[in-house]
Image (cartoon, rainbow, N blue to C red):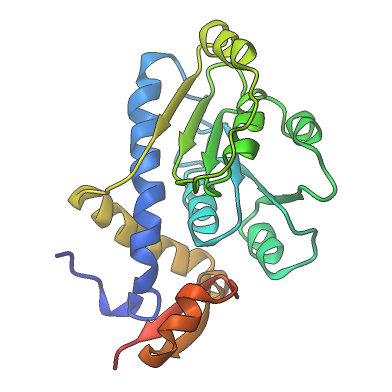
Length: 233
């Protein structure tokens, strides 16, 4: 059990999705100790991060991951299906990120726009898109899987290119799940930071509060909003 400050009561429901990003970030820093990945420290800045991150997907996991990466001084690009303007794009832009739509930009165009991609944070569960993006990770880049795809037909992937890049560009790919206590604590601390920096954007992630009787429609019906909450009170 982790105690959440009363000031975070309205947004505390977001702690659990945020733990996914917090664990991923911890693992990223642990893995990247293998090389001189640190950036020069600039006067007046608390951190010296100069890396670029691509987030695949603009659902709750993707948007909270974007906030965590932005708070860690990454230059964040969110790649999602729906063209801007839309509510998710406004959140991304408000936190200082860049929203890129698959309707207007191919993965090759995304890579050209970003430059060297240091981190990919996958939050879609779409394996076809993920493995296409894996082809364009930058030198010393790291790819994090968080999604679990459903059982679909097999897809073709260029295994030679991906394997060559992993070796010659010194890349890492890993999956992450099941956060521990320290990750929950980090999520609570970062959620407080988000509420200070982007209060309206954090609250806008919760797009609906519903009675428990609505569970069937929420679980089995068409997706709606960003994060739908069930109230048991």
